[in-house]
Structure formats: C-alpha cells, structure tokens
Length: 563
Ligand code: NOJ
Image (cartoon, rainbow, N blue to C red; front, top):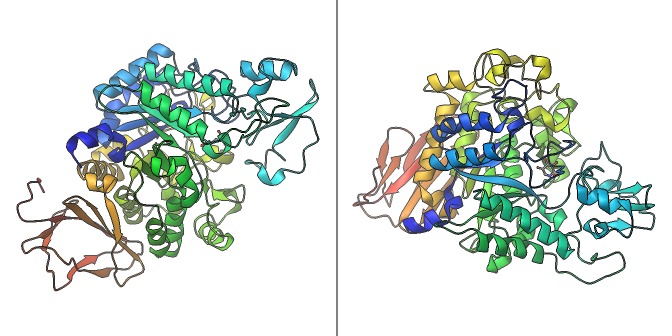
C-alpha cells in the first residue's frame, strides 16, 4: 500500500482507546470524571501510542445504562462539561495526532427523550411512529431480553395509550422505529452535528437490533423497507460530510458470526460499516487462553472472510466496557472459559459472560498478561483498548453488574487513585481494592518502571503503527508442531512479518521454515535485540519461553526500513 493510502484509511492501522468520561479524570473535585480531565491526559495517551480516542456516551441521560440511554443526542451532560469543553478536547487531541470518535446510539433513546415523551402521549402524535408500538398482547419474549435479570421481555405495556412498545434493552430504552425515514433523518442530522464539531467517526451501538425494523413504517402501513439501507444511508452521509484529507469511519458493534457480519460491511460493495468489532476472534481467543491451545483462535482467524473491500477493517479487542460475552461459543466451550476464568458465580454475568478484567483472570501473571497484549496488537486488524488496560487494572466485584469493570482510572497511589479529590462516598464509582488497587497498579508508578505493562503496551502500539502489514496485510497461519503456539505471518506487498505467541507456561522451540526467501534475508526481532538468518532449506529454530512471544520482520537484502 502507498503511504497516502495509509493516511486516508487511517483507521486500518490505528490504535483505538475507549474512555468512559465518568471515571477517567475528575478535574473539578465533584467525584465525576469530565471533559477537561480527559483533555489533561491527552499527552499521556499520545505517549501510550494511542491514535484514536473513542468516547463512550457523554450526552444528557438519566444513566440507567451508563449513558447508552440518551435524552438529547446533541447535548453534553453538564456533569462532564459543555460543548466548549468538547471542542477543546477535540482540538487538543487533533493537535497531538489523535483522532476522536464518539458513540452513536441508533437503536434506542431514553424514555426521557422528548421524542418518546411525545410518542407515548397519544396514538395521533406526529412522533408516535418514531418508536415501535403494538396493540395486541405480545407472546413470551423472555429469551430475547438482553438483560434477563432486569427485564422479563422486550415489550412493555404503556398505560396512557394502552399499547406495548418495543425495547431490546431496558424498558427505559425504547427502540426507535428505524424504518421510519424521519428517524433516519434525525440520526443523520446527529452525525452531521458532531462531524461539524470535529469528530472523525462513530462507534455505532447495537447495530443488528437497529436494522431489524423492516415493515413498521406506520401503525397501519406495512411498506417493506430493506433494513441494510439504513446503514447505506449512514455511510453515504458520512462520506458526503467528511471532507479533507482523510475519511471518517463508522465502527459497528455487530456481535454475530463472521458470515453474518459480511452483510453489515455491505458484502463486496463495502458500502455500509467501515469497521466491525470481531466478536468471534475475541471469544475464541479466550477459549484458546483457557485451553492453552492456539487452535480455536487459529481456526477463527482462518475462517474470517478475506478480500473485503479495501475500506473495511476488523477491530480486535480483549476486553471492553461490557461483560466479556461468550455467546458465540458452544455451551461446552462457554463453560470451559467460565470455569477457568470465572470460577465464582459473582464473576459471571447473565449466564453468558464474565464481569472481570483480563489481569485478574490471569491471577496477575505479568508474563501471561504481556503475551496477551502482544497477541492483540499482532492480529490482523485494528487493536482497541479499554481505559486502564494499559496499566493492568482489575475489576471491583463489589460494584454490581457490568459496572465492575468501569471503576475509576488509577492514576497514582494518592487518594481515590488520583482520579478525584472528592470524598470517596461522592465518587461516580468505587475504586478497586486489593491486589489490583491503586497502591499496586497505577499509571504514575508504571511510567517509572521500564518493565511495566504500560511501557510494553506503548512499545507494541508504536511498533504496530510502524508495521502497516499488521493492519493491512494478508494472514497466513504457519504450520508448526506445538498446539500451544500461534504462529502467523502478515504480508502486504513486499512487507512481511512472522509473529509467534506461546499461550502456555512451557518453554518451547518453534521451527520456522520460510521457503522462497532469497539468500541474505533475516528475521529481525522488533521488540527486543535479536536477528537470525533465514535458510530456505532448513528451519530456523526460535525458542519461546513460557508465555513468550516474538515479532519478527522478514527483512530482505536492500530493505530500506530502519530495522
Ligand atoms: C451495547 C453497549 O456496549 C452496552 O453497554 C449497552 O448496554 C447496549 N449496547 C445498549 O445500548
């Protein structure tokens, strides 16, 4: 690829970092993180190697679902600051070469949103069809509720007009009728607004739910609407409105198997989402970790559709702000992961996942944690970090539900981990206690320790950005004798890398045979000192210590690159 392509399609080798403002840094001592707090930490993020910031919802909201229940899509929740603070954040981030994307919730609003208040007021309201209503008694939908502990179905009866409205999430999050052209227009208007304030794209929430309205264009009308047209509309709009030297992107949350995700990219046309999180690879990675066997991950990577439109990209992640959902695994595989990493009931969520962060699952073993992040950055696609992963934060199981992993960022050993000067009882969420608490895990200490996870992640981020073949390249899984090891090769044009990861604590020798390489080609270690000659006939043997990893550049004679 040309340098200019990598700049245009910047998201194909970006390092994305997700921030929940609420718990990042409180600049005014009220116990709640805010926009000026985050702005103060942009230099820290630049230092980590982050090139794109993803802001979780910061809009006005009753916060029944951590802000994913929005009551004003154009607003800034005053607890976090105002539009001036938002623009200031974007300006500072851009100045440091960091792009900014924001959450776009297209499937639902809060029940406090003026649209829903008007919609529920009367059956004749012009806003009635902004949401999905039914007059007949719904069947049992308990299986479809996303939060089974909190909701027993996806329809709620509304006294005022004596009908039921649809909500896949909480009953305080009514689903929008996305087949309604007025709703589509209202959503694109929202995108236009934030693009004008400088954002570089959107993380689109709950996409499959949002495009499942096909016929409900009015209480009694049954005009068929092609559901994926909604995504085409969003993409077209984005393309028209994002001008300048690089394109904006839309990163969709589509928790479906690879084959089903294809339609959300727009198949070969690639005219819908530009990026999607890879939930299959995420879940199979944890299965591989649990078994200390790289094969499930290797299979998932191999069956990932190739030859997608050049503008599309997968986003890889280990943990995010939700539970680690295992819903794409078989029941037996799910149990294996749960038994290994969430042995206590309290560590589990809704029977399908874990409410833990990765270092706690690995009992804090630094070798294993470092290997896991090396693996994340080495996978084909774009890596996404959740705040605090770079320093190895753990969870607080005393905090209920999914909030257990959304605790305050641990900046230092100071009061409240340096997150806020407020009284602990006033904090947005409780700080982690115990071995993963701020006395042991914090950014300030990690900065001073050259062997820290923070430095490791920083190195990986910089190397990753320096090696566009990881984000852009074609994948080959390399045969080797140990099922504990993932050996893969990423190639783009004449740039190529070999990456090996040992998922087990055993030391192993990995033979690498690179055929068709000319004499004088070397494998250069990009993370530590070391190089070895490639012999086309004989295998090069690379020793991996327990949980060891290597990033080896295939450097041919005359290659002008620095290393
Ligand atoms: C997915 C988000 O990641 C999650 O946190 C939220 O609860 C649901 N979508 C509903 O918006």
